[in-house]
Length: 412
Image 1: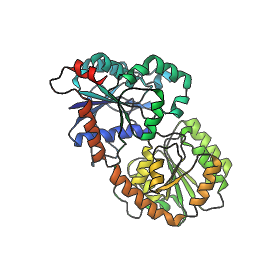
Image 2: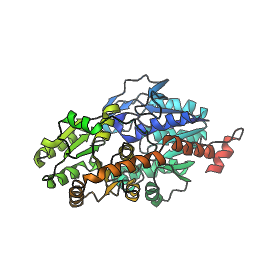
Image 3: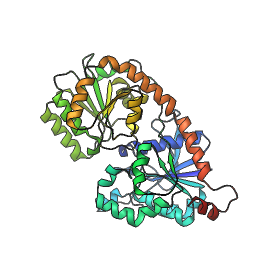
Image 4: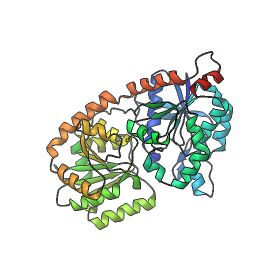
């Protein structure tokens, strides 16, 4: 079975969804699915240094198998004077290639809404009667739909609603995401299959190493915020809350990058709150450096306003790190059920109270971390997740020697 994954960008600066697709495709290929990716060369404000217009083997930063690469076709992202059009990731080359080659595939797995590559792929698939699954990555959740609400409402009504309704199935990663999207009254079949996670190799004495690297005193709790720097993630509220808990010992590590103006705003807040001296801004991290932070910290903190899944949270659990997060993060029920950390509203008052509590309970960290690692291993192995996705492909792809028009009619 040939499956084409479409996503606007696989650049690491675009966050967890981009990395998750690379890992998903690598796991599917190990499972025997002939899966590949078509995307643009987008890299945030720049473009990736990749060959466009042909299939290349692209490395997966943290793969389910060391040295794993996946086949990716990159296409030029059009550069325009309009910043909003550039962010829409318009690509004539991708459009042309999809029109001529989309029928070479048995099924499409499309990731992301409200972006040109995904929108175009769904429209072309409908024209050529190629079935597709859509993974909306939380963009049908309430918080996401309230951002640029008028623009999204118009776009949804004029273009995306037909694409959604004609999908063979909608792929959600949590039941919470499905429940929010169900309020829109969409009729296609709905799947809930979570992200998988790579179980990292353990670093020897990671906490001691990290403290030496950052010059942090022994026994001082290290709180790790590792995510894209964006107002959605609640970092500003975390900083304000920690400023009210400044009598307790801790160091905050902030890993990630974002819009330069927002980064400058965060730096000003750290300065004015008095936390700059015990905050370490390490920028965007990946690979071994990322694992050193995940395994060397004491608590992972992500008080986000909305996460349809929370890839970074799952990575923290896999590294054996207790988590403090908000109910708006879809993995929060799992964390609460298995006592893998703390769940609280992302108001300053609630965060301050919970942070004061957890900073005086460091003796609980090891047991929580051990449970977290075990849950990640037992419930989110890429081997099992790839098996579930492959089964869904068999359900929705055309049967051999079956006329595609008949199969499509049955799916719709």
